[in-house]
Image 1: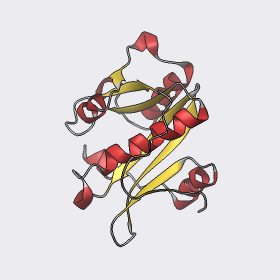
Image 2: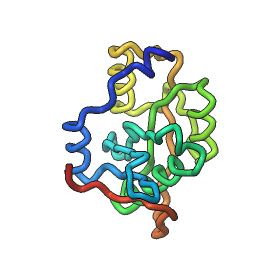
Image 3: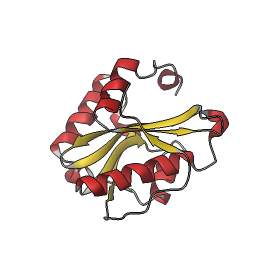
Image 4: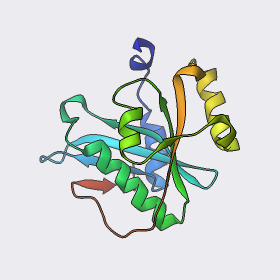
Length: 156
Protein backbone atom coordinates (compact mmCIF):
# COMPACT_ATOMS: atom_id res chain seq x y z
CA UNK A 1 0.00 0.00 0.00
CA UNK A 2 3.05 2.26 -0.26
CA UNK A 3 1.66 3.81 -3.47
CA UNK A 4 -1.53 4.82 -1.67
CA UNK A 5 0.36 6.20 1.33
CA UNK A 6 2.56 8.23 -1.01
CA UNK A 7 -0.42 9.97 -2.62
CA UNK A 8 -0.49 13.72 -2.17
CA UNK A 9 -3.08 14.98 0.32
CA UNK A 10 -6.16 16.71 -1.02
CA UNK A 11 -5.31 20.24 -2.15
CA UNK A 12 -6.39 23.20 -0.04
CA UNK A 13 -8.34 24.47 -3.07
CA UNK A 14 -10.35 21.25 -3.28
CA UNK A 15 -10.90 21.21 0.50
CA UNK A 16 -12.14 24.81 0.27
CA UNK A 17 -14.68 23.74 -2.37
CA UNK A 18 -16.11 21.16 0.05
CA UNK A 19 -16.14 23.75 2.85
CA UNK A 20 -18.01 26.34 0.77
CA UNK A 21 -20.59 23.69 -0.17
CA UNK A 22 -21.11 22.75 3.52
CA UNK A 23 -19.90 19.20 2.90
CA UNK A 24 -16.89 18.99 5.21
CA UNK A 25 -16.38 18.58 8.95
CA UNK A 26 -13.36 18.52 11.20
CA UNK A 27 -12.51 16.95 14.54
CA UNK A 28 -10.32 18.97 16.85
CA UNK A 29 -8.23 18.22 19.90
CA UNK A 30 -8.43 20.04 23.24
CA UNK A 31 -6.27 22.86 21.89
CA UNK A 32 -8.66 23.27 18.94
CA UNK A 33 -6.14 21.85 16.40
CA UNK A 34 -7.67 19.94 13.52
CA UNK A 35 -6.83 16.24 13.92
CA UNK A 36 -9.33 14.70 11.52
CA UNK A 37 -11.72 15.55 8.72
CA UNK A 38 -14.34 14.15 6.39
CA UNK A 39 -15.48 15.45 3.00
CA UNK A 40 -18.60 14.37 1.18
CA UNK A 41 -19.97 14.42 -2.36
CA UNK A 42 -23.59 13.80 -3.28
CA UNK A 43 -23.68 10.83 -5.66
CA UNK A 44 -26.97 9.43 -6.98
CA UNK A 45 -28.99 10.79 -4.06
CA UNK A 46 -26.54 9.54 -1.43
CA UNK A 47 -23.91 11.19 0.75
CA UNK A 48 -20.70 9.72 -0.62
CA UNK A 49 -17.72 9.89 1.73
CA UNK A 50 -14.91 11.02 -0.51
CA UNK A 51 -12.31 11.06 2.24
CA UNK A 52 -12.24 10.52 5.99
CA UNK A 53 -8.93 10.86 7.78
CA UNK A 54 -7.70 11.06 11.37
CA UNK A 55 -4.10 11.81 12.32
CA UNK A 56 -2.34 8.61 13.47
CA UNK A 57 -1.73 9.93 16.99
CA UNK A 58 -5.46 10.51 17.43
CA UNK A 59 -6.75 7.26 15.97
CA UNK A 60 -8.57 4.79 18.19
CA UNK A 61 -10.43 7.54 20.06
CA UNK A 62 -13.67 7.37 18.07
CA UNK A 63 -13.02 10.48 15.99
CA UNK A 64 -13.48 8.74 12.63
CA UNK A 65 -16.69 7.19 13.92
CA UNK A 66 -17.89 10.61 15.15
CA UNK A 67 -17.11 12.19 11.78
CA UNK A 68 -19.12 9.50 10.00
CA UNK A 69 -22.02 10.01 12.43
CA UNK A 70 -21.89 13.72 11.59
CA UNK A 71 -22.19 12.84 7.90
CA UNK A 72 -25.14 10.61 8.72
CA UNK A 73 -26.85 13.42 10.63
CA UNK A 74 -26.23 15.84 7.77
CA UNK A 75 -27.46 13.35 5.17
CA UNK A 76 -30.66 12.76 7.16
CA UNK A 77 -31.25 16.51 7.30
CA UNK A 78 -30.70 16.75 3.55
CA UNK A 79 -33.18 13.93 2.90
CA UNK A 80 -30.53 11.67 1.37
CA UNK A 81 -31.28 7.96 1.42
CA UNK A 82 -27.88 6.50 2.27
CA UNK A 83 -24.17 7.03 2.82
CA UNK A 84 -21.78 5.37 0.41
CA UNK A 85 -18.03 5.00 0.19
CA UNK A 86 -15.34 3.02 -1.53
CA UNK A 87 -12.55 1.39 0.44
CA UNK A 88 -9.98 -1.37 0.45
CA UNK A 89 -11.59 -4.73 1.13
CA UNK A 90 -8.74 -6.33 3.05
CA UNK A 91 -7.24 -3.46 5.06
CA UNK A 92 -8.07 -4.26 8.72
CA UNK A 93 -8.94 -0.70 9.72
CA UNK A 94 -11.16 0.00 6.67
CA UNK A 95 -13.90 -2.42 5.71
CA UNK A 96 -14.32 -4.00 9.19
CA UNK A 97 -14.72 -0.58 10.80
CA UNK A 98 -17.35 0.45 8.28
CA UNK A 99 -19.18 -2.85 8.74
CA UNK A 100 -19.29 -2.25 12.51
CA UNK A 101 -20.83 1.15 11.75
CA UNK A 102 -23.63 -0.43 9.70
CA UNK A 103 -22.24 -0.31 6.17
CA UNK A 104 -22.52 -3.34 3.91
CA UNK A 105 -20.59 -4.28 0.80
CA UNK A 106 -22.55 -3.81 -2.42
CA UNK A 107 -22.55 -6.41 -5.17
CA UNK A 108 -21.67 -5.28 -8.69
CA UNK A 109 -25.35 -5.46 -9.66
CA UNK A 110 -26.22 -2.99 -6.86
CA UNK A 111 -23.86 -0.23 -7.95
CA UNK A 112 -25.51 2.98 -9.08
CA UNK A 113 -24.23 4.75 -12.20
CA UNK A 114 -22.39 7.27 -10.03
CA UNK A 115 -20.65 4.57 -7.99
CA UNK A 116 -19.65 2.79 -11.20
CA UNK A 117 -18.16 6.05 -12.47
CA UNK A 118 -16.25 6.51 -9.20
CA UNK A 119 -14.87 2.97 -9.47
CA UNK A 120 -13.80 3.68 -13.06
CA UNK A 121 -12.08 6.88 -11.91
CA UNK A 122 -10.26 5.01 -9.13
CA UNK A 123 -9.10 2.39 -11.61
CA UNK A 124 -7.90 5.11 -13.98
CA UNK A 125 -5.79 6.44 -11.08
CA UNK A 126 -4.20 3.03 -10.51
CA UNK A 127 -6.39 1.54 -7.77
CA UNK A 128 -7.01 -2.15 -8.43
CA UNK A 129 -10.76 -2.80 -8.70
CA UNK A 130 -10.27 -6.26 -7.23
CA UNK A 131 -8.94 -4.77 -3.98
CA UNK A 132 -11.76 -2.23 -3.58
CA UNK A 133 -15.36 -2.47 -2.46
CA UNK A 134 -18.30 -0.09 -2.53
CA UNK A 135 -20.24 0.09 0.71
CA UNK A 136 -23.61 1.57 1.67
CA UNK A 137 -25.45 2.42 4.85
CA UNK A 138 -29.09 3.54 4.89
CA UNK A 139 -29.74 6.91 6.50
CA UNK A 140 -32.45 7.09 9.11
CA UNK A 141 -33.75 10.53 10.13
CA UNK A 142 -32.53 11.54 13.56
CA UNK A 143 -31.81 14.70 15.53
CA UNK A 144 -28.99 13.54 17.81
CA UNK A 145 -25.53 15.00 17.33
CA UNK A 146 -22.50 12.89 18.22
CA UNK A 147 -20.50 13.87 21.25
CA UNK A 148 -17.16 15.48 20.65
CA UNK A 149 -15.67 18.55 19.11
CA UNK A 150 -16.85 18.34 15.51
CA UNK A 151 -17.27 21.55 13.59
CA UNK A 152 -18.76 22.24 10.17
CA UNK A 153 -16.36 23.92 7.82
CA UNK A 154 -18.23 26.58 5.91
CA UNK A 155 -15.35 28.65 4.63
CA UNK A 156 -11.84 27.94 3.46
